[in-house]
Image 1 (cartoon, rainbow, N blue to C red):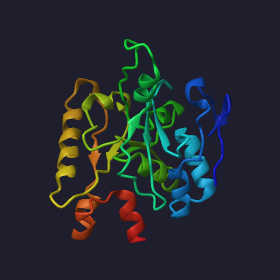
Image 2 (spheres, rainbow, N blue to C red):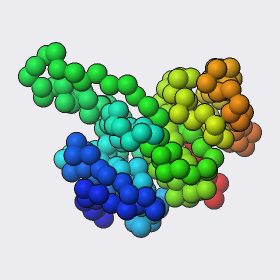
Image 3 (cartoon, one colour):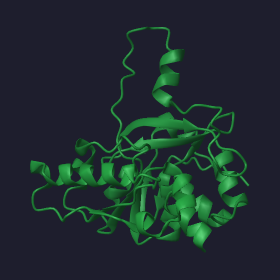
Amino acid sequence: MGRELGLKIELFEGHIVAFPTMWRKALSTESQFCKAVVACHYLSERQMLRAARRYRLGATRQQGVIFWQIDNHDAIHDGKVMYYLPDCHRDKGRHPTWVSTLLARRDPFPNAPHETSHCLFGLHLLSYGTTRTVAIVEAEKSAVILSELYPQSIWLATGGLGNIQADKFRPLRGHKVILFPDTDPEGTTYRRWYEAAQLVMQQPFWEDSPPIRVSPLLEQHATEEQKSRKIDLVDYLFESG
């Protein structure tokens, strides 16, 4: 499996999408991540191709996946490069890095502007003008997979436990939002995300927006063994199915 997806202008899900030159050439399902998602039966080849186009996934020459962070105005903020093993688990021997960091290393001018501000992964999907519920998970991997399994929602990812700052929710005002935190033995993640949701709802920009829900699904139904492994929603769904 593996296809180059780059085209200058494409019609996708009823919308004309123009792909900026910076990352158009990197659009691909050649990453080990895309191949592993199919090999491990999370998605079919057809579903993976569709999800890769939806999130505009990229690939490095070393088969790392590039999770591009594109906002609701279609502006690129950065790209997270991650490496996965054939079992679809992250290769913890290779630390994630940012495209902006890689560009800075190549630039011979030390004062070149490579500073970026990060946003939620998948935020560009809001620009399609749909009114679907916005569902937020932690891992980009999970958002990609769940977007095919539950397409009635727009799936976004924070990209990390601590990346759920209130200001990142500004583009989501007016939307119905539900958070799906990972689980752990102490319930730490759930509490942190619940507190973050309360903080967002106290912000002036969230006035008149629907309340943010924090799903207790994993806290209530995951086993102690699953909590010890700190599973997420995708893990739970496939292990329970």
